[in-house]
Image (tube, rainbow, N blue to C red):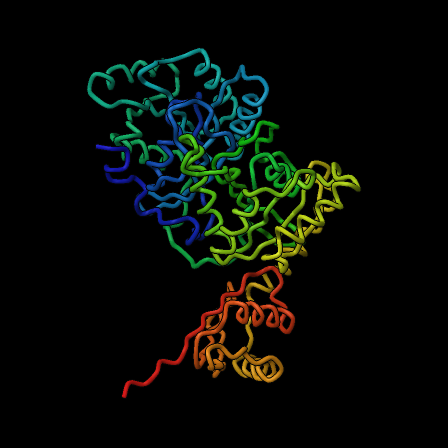
Length: 460
């Protein structure tokens, strides 16, 4: 039986992107040494494959939160990087993220590998957990059979009470573990859901190491995401609620999109899928570009992904402190050449590291969202189309000249127009209509979709 063949513990949890829990939701932090199976257990709890899993330590680097529920009670699960108290460098910052997660949590799920037993690192983590004075539930993971279950009871020696034998991969014992977690968490109202509303959802996207996490930290005013010069530090999408301009925004920091998803190694492949999912969940994508480097094929591919998904777009040229006069000259040429398809996207120049001009992001987001949600009345649209056709009729093709009979805006987010015509329109004429629509009605920051429906010829 594979990891996801067994019934999911959190199968009633729903998709956190589409639903939100009402009332105060308690927080459960999942901590433990690297590679003890925390992310696999988190996937089991939330009932879907969200956390990136690979049989290699250090794949999770930030604290990442997910909505979950069990027995009608809602709670938030925070997955953390492997906690090694003696870590240095990047690992030390990962450990700091785990420590922050514990300080913010209502209860802690401490995961230990039962097949390895108690290590010095586990005992060091126990001291930190005791100092936090938070309720702790002990999970003895990787207990796949009766023999390993006997070994799990050796974890009583940690002094944290009863160890709960569980197999995150197969789901064995996860129900009892979840019952124990609910006992440790404070009581909350019965689970209920509400439609999406509230904070606008913003996906930070771009190549690895362009400064997405640095931008998120600067916006948040604190180090919420691990930042390192090693490309690809972020693997899971990280959701953060940040108040900017007097209102809350939900930022999704994503892993850098690699050149070719299919050839990416294990966790990079899944991280790329998460990034595509983050764009789908968002309303606006902020493409972060390293202004000091030439625009690349990857940047253009990401723009195409955002356009195909119908999301609003803002382009942020980061590391502007490294852009000299010569680079600006070439960048202007690259923008004219490479970004011709998204001339409508607001562009801002920033330096995330120092915070220079980061305050320009919110006005750009507001403009993009306004364009994304713009609606043109049917009367306005057809008056506009009448003037357009009178001034610039469609060229005659093969002795025929298609005419636009009627138009309507079918939806917003993104603006989608249906044109009823007497024949097929040239692609060039469709682009001309889109350009004039933008000149007339704005549509800043959003793709426009035109659907042409030629009138069917009547059969005699």
